[in-house]
Image (tube, rainbow, N blue to C red; front, side, top):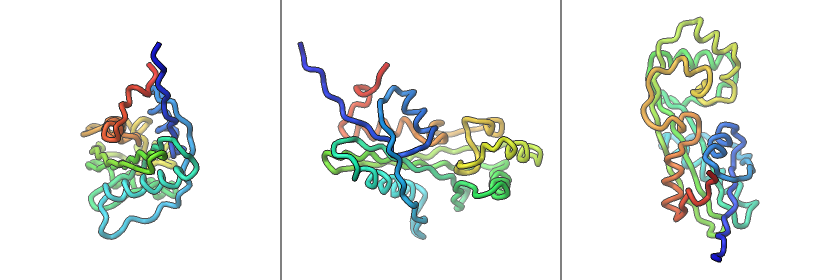
Length: 203
């Protein structure tokens, strides 16, 4: 009888329930050890792709210090409108202003992923971009959405998988990237790291 292959331990360096749900639905067995990194601001010469990748790497490296042989998954997501980076709103008024800006326009959602191999002290990273178009929002739309409370702790003040789906009429790119974890980019990242992801999934 062939020896059963011993699989590595996976660690998700994020407390995001959305990332947890996506990876769980894939069938990946993992533990959660969220990074507590104080996110640095974007550098003046840094584009959104470079910024989210840098943050994902910093988060992975911080969490990796607690694990000797695990594979660390880290991610960071931002919403970009033109040259403006839209983070998580700090108040209802700020969320209202963000939604007003997004109304009737295209914006981009950028995610950076990092896969850190603690055994080899080596990491690989990748960036993914999706484009989202909001229909024109009325004052009633915005007020109704704010009353749901869904905007809290969401980059760009909305959740594509929630009530904000009523506002989105076009998407280009990976849907899961907009939720916060680009699955297709993750598979590419694993493959480039010499990991066949399917061997680690339960079906």
